[in-house]
Length: 242
Image (tube, rainbow, N blue to C red):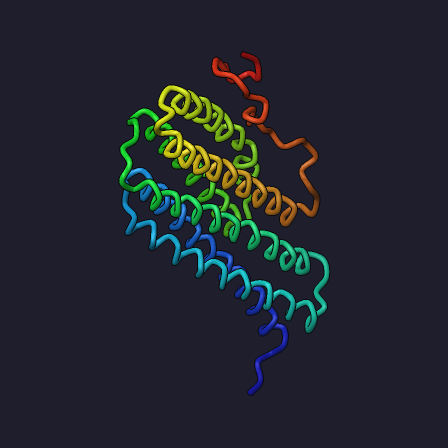
């Protein structure tokens, strides 16, 4: 007996949620492993992270294919169409998080044999843990359809920016004081920027969830505190002034 069209349609929408959850789980793992690989100088763990990224990419393609198929065959409207379109948008952000985690893992491999200052790596670990919490919370917000959690993630993006500002200046100082290790600090600087960008993508997902639930965008301007584009000299005090 053929499956009832309504039941089949509901199953397809559920499959989209399942794939997003799988992508989110892999993205969490990839980010955590990339940070651990860099912190503990573990190239083997970094290689595992690269494999996670390939799986995330494959899932994104599956989300796209299913979403397009549903739109073409079911002609969804209202909240169903919003769910489908937003699943595509969230999958894009998760795919980018996978890419950024992969970039961190590659840099972990490149500098695996290099010693690095404990203070710098502690700051790196702190921003990494903050990004992990942000990603976990936004994935919980999606699975629970909880706009309150999504809004909290959106508001916390500036916390990661503040950590990045501090780490940026610390790494810049280290590069000037230890020019012989400039390559090492450049890898760490790019890795820190990758984490800051992961926070941005988590915030993108939070905005998408808010729209999914309420059918409208957040009216307020996104809170941002990344001042590094205005930082040229040392002595940056976190306010945009020397």
